[in-house]
Image (tube, rainbow over all chains, first blue to last red; front, side, top):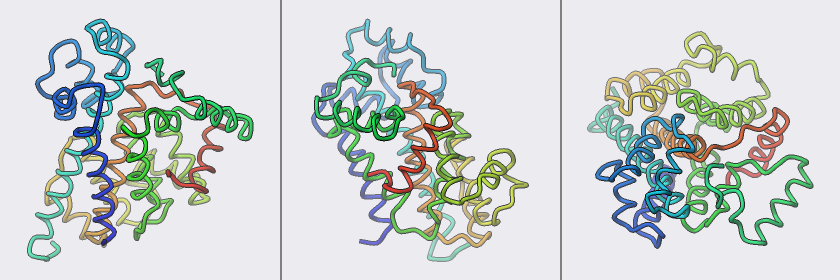
Length: 108
Length: 193
């Protein structure tokens, strides 16, 4: 397996696991956290911060999500899905730009 | 950390391992290391495999270059734990802390090769803005970086955009300088597996 494929395969294995493997949060909730889309308050605030402004996450974000019924294990999974999801979008954007720049095998 | 399970929810064998690490290293186990031990089947096992491949797998970039990319991406994200951890690791890998400090202070004037500079500039833009275009990539390629090196750099960027977010969200505790130096030594000896 070429080296770049090993890196991408290892990344894809992580994405597949957090989205499709067994979890305490439902697969639907994990998919929504991954895409940072379609979650209800107050979880949407926590997940949105993890994706876009993670330094602004506070104890209160976790407390509000727990008060709305999520367990710590569910929040562990959903925060991870949000982080892995945002990073996966960066990967796609970077690889797409590289592919465009090297179209037809031409560099430049 | 902000979830009790990440402070106290480990299996007895794992707790024993943490105690052993504290005893031998004389430093607390870094939160970044603890996180991958919590329910490793969900995140830790595959995260470690991907990060190790990105940071230590075959690449035309040196280990020092990749650790510098990790520090730089973390700086763009303002992620305190990872900035310190990978500044220490890049500095040890290069045996040149001033080079790393210069890059983090001002990328444009730092004494590094143009290809690495162009790559860091592109990773910074992707991390800051969430996107890059073909023109950004052409600028990197024109600086002498191969498409394969760009892919390798993207993998580093993705690994640390994930870890930075988790560090900030879960609230990784920032260690002492000595703690980060010990962690860097470990990462250079053993990698991320």
